[in-house]
Picture (cartoon, rainbow, N blue to C red):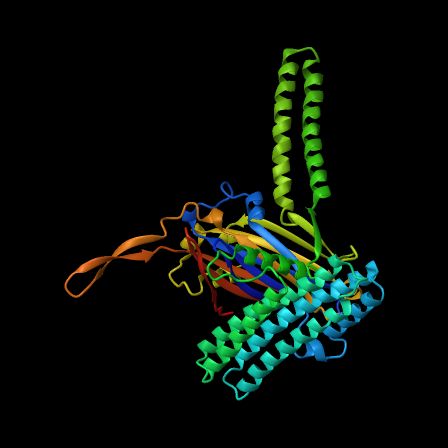
Length: 490
């Protein structure tokens, strides 16, 4: 299954994260993802009110390498670990502060930070899943110990690279990494405290104290280093959030892949338009030849026939263009995106298209899944819904991918799509209504929330296997309220 997560990104957008895992035995890995979005008719979203350009302006896509996964302790202990790679790069830059050595140092620094962040998240998930086991104490003690060791070993590197031969702007990259890790650990400790609080752990008070003490030490450390990300209990903290976002972009940028998008089928489209123009011209020319032979070149009949044929020529050309365009739109996509590595080599190609479709043109299996969990939906109600289909095809060239990413075990590519729904809420009713409820001897008014359901079915294909997932996006004029995953009966 390609889907990693579907979640709310912000008030007016949701995020779909897909993982394309590489099969190294295949020269080309081919993936297909079809997303069906079923919209209530009263939202008034249709071909006339919501165009392709509207859809693509609401869509935002990021393609990045899947962060390598490590156990926390293996980040610094394992041979050829992220820390050993970074330490080696630090020693090289200390010996020779060349541009090549600095680029290598920056790459391993950012990879170390990204991997540590991912590993902390994995560790928290592991604690959460195994909390009722007998290993609770061991898992929690290891969590604290491993994070402490990672921070300590990372900060020891300052003694290697804080030397006169390394430029200040290059040394700042290391300090930014230090600040990033400190913030990651602070957020993780709060997440840890919330997690064990929900589990009603017997030793919660002591663990909470340990977690808060860890946070205080990191804040004090950032203050001592004159870092910008210091939380202010009485302030707006807009600066804190801004700098955290900038640090995240800086540390993650080695994972993001460069892309260039072009219109798909452009040459075929131009040939078709030329063919349509040619056929229309053929019609006009034949009419001119026939009328000239019958009425002569200086007759009024010939004059009027030429005018009418010219008028019809333009209409025939447009009708043929529309006809051919409808025939090929299922063959070609709207856009073709090339995916590049840091060496500007193409390692993959992504194609995508958007269209409104009718229920009768959708596979019966998709419609069956749409009706599941809503037994009251009848075929007529389903027909009234407006259905958007977003098709995506991805090719990843395994040999080119593996030839360029060998320092770390990149198992594939992550495709993050964010979709904004603000255009969908323009014609919604007020987000709440008054209803009446009974009390003991009378009745009174209360507020009830008015919501709409967008049903989404995602079909993903890989190696001739199809996977299906259904989600319900619950929203109103105030934005997205929640996203539910609906179990499917295959």
